[in-house]
Length: 115
Length: 113
Image (tube, rainbow over all chains, first blue to last red):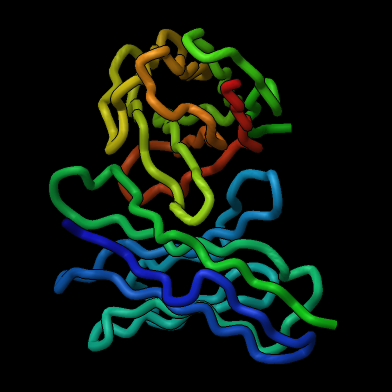
């Protein structure tokens, strides 16, 4: 079965430090990739998505992600963490073929920002 | 102000009772989705609908039912057959299906006592 793996269920960074959240997918065919953010007891909000136009994708709130086919990865980064970035982040993948309307979500990474 | 509304925010039910969660969107989207979220599990697809009067099962449809009689509404019923219904339920919609961005509602937290 196709899957998406987020390494690290919980990541802590200091305010102002680099944020790196990891996402790997399992397919030889580049899928549709996206990152969502969820604040406590709220729905999900799209941060960014890969559309094959460029391997480096810029999103909202200063986040960006780079698609690396050779590594089957789509890691999320932000140069300088802010307290307001504390939330849970989900990588989502849509694979082509049967069931292509379905998004497969990773299990999430909870980001804590230390003052 | 366009968006997706889910009601209620919190819902409590006794074991063995059916309960219906509301999802309404005024974005004029064709496709709608229901997800279940459990701590540390990510989101899992329950049902989705690409068009009015049509819907398909997702990965965990057992114990759930849906209807899509109107474009803007996609209610989810959690039946007594669902073994572990306590969870956070999220509704989403997209313009069409495929690679269109999914927009999420605020969620309903269901607790079965």
